[in-house]
Image 1 (cartoon, rainbow, N blue to C red):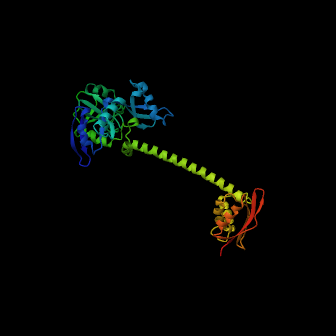
Image 2: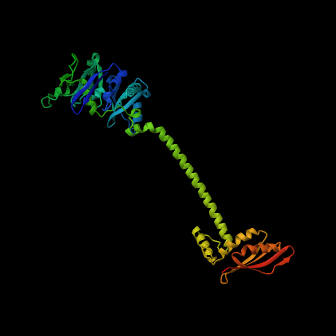
Image 3: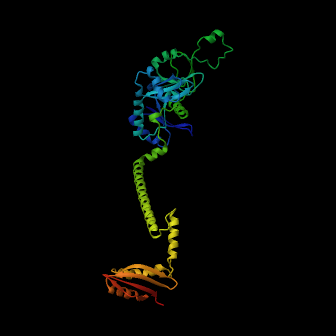
Length: 402
């Protein structure tokens, strides 16, 4: 397994070498730490082909593609990753590779702590020419790039047979149509192949040498510029924010559950308070109608408050010492101490500043007890007491002491 570190800024190779296998990838972890990493999958491990797209399949192309290739493939399409490289009209250019091969490669890279930005067929990293194929030999295998999305990895033993089968002859740049004879134009022209490593012997095609370069350097340059990336579908890399948030997923779930619980508790609490408020409202309206029966209609709570405050003011509330309520406030404690005595009726005369009430009890002494309790704050004038049967009745007049 060959590798190379290329510096785009310095335009030079930083380091290069060869690993014995995937299990040694951790040796490259330091180089990969601060650099984008492009993994090349050998062209011999995949199929680059094209397929016609049926009418009406454009919107579901990613789903339909594997089944359009089903008759041309020797394996079950469910075991294959089919990636759309390019679409030209009704033609789809695709790359087909086994899921198992991608999983093994990505798992080894992950175990080594290496994050891959692209997974590219190695033949598609060779330089692209419009008038010729591109070729380079790597580890005894010829990488051939035919077009933007087509290429192969050919063993030397069958490279000649494959080239003979190609039906895409290209006219060399130095031959013009004006100089060519009509018969020559109709005849197949020799295939032009630009090569960066020594050309093989006894194979078809016109082999044109390009400036020799390290094949891995050539592939590194092409990988950086390539638009192809087989990391699609289930292999699509996660966005940066998702990777950073993944370790906090359990915490976020716990926080979410806590938030749901708090919101639920708040909703229940609000509902309970609303029910309580409705109960208070109903009770306040009941009391309002009981003490002020002349008001039957209560259009709003503010109306209720205004009428109650108005009545309080009329009765001497809100701090008015000349009203009835201060008298009742002072009379109440005394009456509570003489519980056997009950008030039958009551009359307040504000002009004369006196309070009269008629009371009844079972004993004469109860009136005397009440008079004694009220004499500290009032001048108490007790009328004649009358006893009828078991009831003693009498009138009491209270005036404030000057």
